[in-house]
Length: 334
Ligand code: SAM
Image: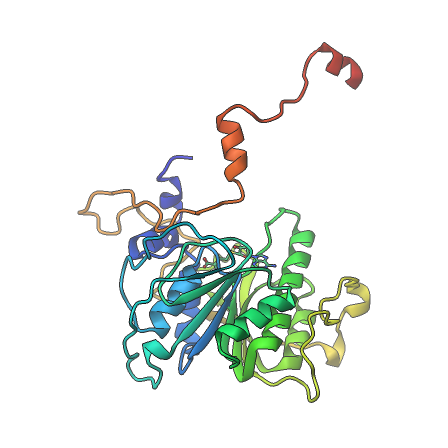
């Protein structure tokens, strides 16, 4: 694949690089915010499954009042468990009571990610109680106002398997959220609108009085991805957050769990992002301004320790194990 082929196909991929976002998914959170005003009055925010960090960038820029391009922290590689971005003094966010310096943002991911200003990283697993405790420790015992999760497993291409794993990840995110979110707080998470999505909606409705399914314009129509925006966290009376919560239902039985008739929960569906925003399913010319020449823009933050690094190294150096295709092998096959 040539360097510009993805540029040609994907306008948001191109814009992300031009505007200094680490991934095109930044636009999804920005468009969700346009619709729901997610960041109003938020002092403490958690970004679950944050790497490579474009949602954390959005949180940092929006909550800390830093609307600057190319604010990457020139950085050493991430080592150990926690990484703090270079401290940049925040500015007041117009029209809000929250000041930049009061804001605390925590980002969690299994993968290491390059530092970001004003964002504390935890390299950890969102299914672990220790991760919840670590988050609360960073907030000095206070709960979060907002938890976002763009988590996704490595997609296998087998739709049923992918939907199942995504649902489990969403429930894991809900689980850790019940440990760290304040009553009245907001939870936003990626969801696959598969055939069992109503069951997920009803599980979310147990904890939030408002649940809306939203599709930002930057999320391709051809993808079953959408986002649940869950507002007003209000757990059932006496609910005790618990990581081995039965919501993480490993014996997920679709026939048994299917909700029908009056038990079926319907949540509103909202397309969001300005109608004049770019359509992620369309192909746009490489230069939106025809009078300008096309220049390739490199990614804002290349992956620092990608899981495919070792495979690339082996392939480059011709060290990958080769299938034995000699006569003995052919005989065995016959
Ligand atoms: N929101 C990110 C951004 O804008 O840059 C992109 C997130 S990426 C689509 C999904 C991430 O989920 C991956 O980095 C992966 O490591 C993370 N992830 C998956 N399972 C996880 C788990 N159990 N705990 C923590 N992170 C997880």
